[in-house]
Amino acid sequence: YILLLASTSSVSAGPAGAAANAGLKAIDYRYFIAGGVCAATSHGITTPIDVVKTKMQAQPEVYDKGMNAAALSILKAEGPSALLGG
Image (cartoon, rainbow, N blue to C red; front, side, top):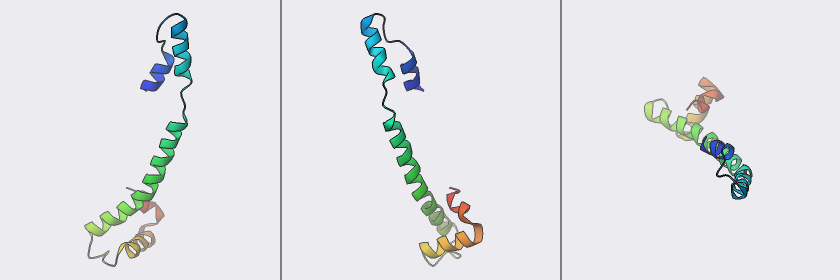
């Protein structure tokens, strides 16, 4: 929001202000895209692991054979979408 507001508002009047506005319009969006891709990747990897860990902690009598066995058990019982539930 702040970046969009900054890019649409003028800094100051005159030639110096026009040069500053040109600099604001040339925002490099690659950093935003890279950050989004990194966040999506890290959450896509860690969320299923966290779901398995939480189920193992909540029901230790059911999931007592390790992470892999617990993950397979959850996949068989609830389907793949259960691991992305959070």
